[in-house]
Amino acid sequence: MNDGGVLLEALDVERTYRLGRDVEVRALRGVSFRVEHGDYVAIVGTSGSGKSTLLNLLGALDRPTSGRILYAGTDVLDLTEAELAELRNRRIGFVFQSFHLLPRLTALDNVALPLVYRPGTTRRRRELAAEALAAVGLADRMDHRPTELSGGQQQRVAIARAVVTDPDLVLADEPTGNLDTATGQDIMALLEGLHAERGTALVVITHEREIAARATRRIELRDGVVLQEAG
Ligand SMILES: Nc1ncnc2c1ncn2[C@@H]1O[C@H](COP(=O)(O)OP(=O)(O)OP(=O)(O)O)[C@@H](O)[C@H]1O
Ligand SMILES: [Mg+2]
Image 1 (cartoon, helix red, strand yellow):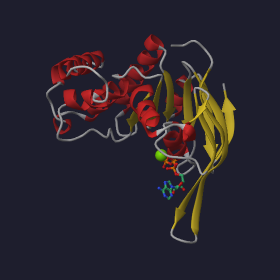
Image 2: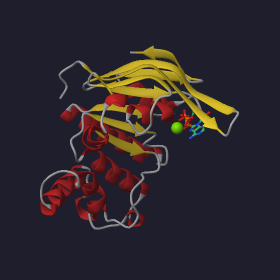
Image 3: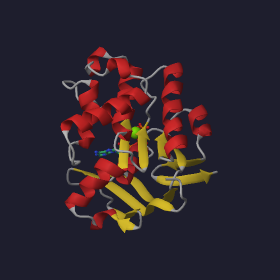
Image 4: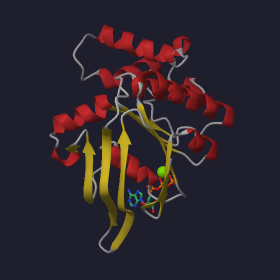
């Protein structure tokens, strides 16, 4: 729901990767910013500036070295394993550049996967997955495996999987990076449609200026810090 208010907040977040004994990479060096309910934020910055690192932290896939990530006011570090699983499974949807679909499963079963922890019958889960696939224009491809789909279709399956739980937030890491321009525009239109219709907050990492220009806000990272935040 787009009811205003802070959904997610990063407070002075640092993430240092340790490689062996002596080598450290300070991927994020004190990043603070907020995502409001129903926001549409583009994260931009050169390769290696820390964009994916930040997105993984926002999605509770990784933990900050210091600083805090607050989800609806609660520090993600204070959540139990069950609460974390619920957050990752139901409240947040992920879309990646390389789709990350399970190769042995059909489109339908890939999309139904995030629903497995939810009470209800397999039949109901498959119905919900079928609805999500129909919403991304793939009603006629449900039984295809990922290798039997085009790149754009695979990304649409990934979007259906990200939104089948009706999350508050979709995090997308260069969702159009492996697609041609026209297909990339279709994918962005799809994500923007979900944002507009359901009020799902959208945070998208992109290298493409035209895509960044469509967001309501832009965050620019450089060398692990926020260089500027433009409305
Ligand atoms: N698992 C890891 N272990 C060690 N260093 C890492 C790891 N992941 C990322 N890094 C380093 O952290 C820095 C930030 O990486 P990150 O993947 O966040 O960049 P990015 O902005 O997403 O770049 P790109 O646009 O190329 O995807 C880079 O210097 C990278 O080499
Ligand atoms: Mg990246």
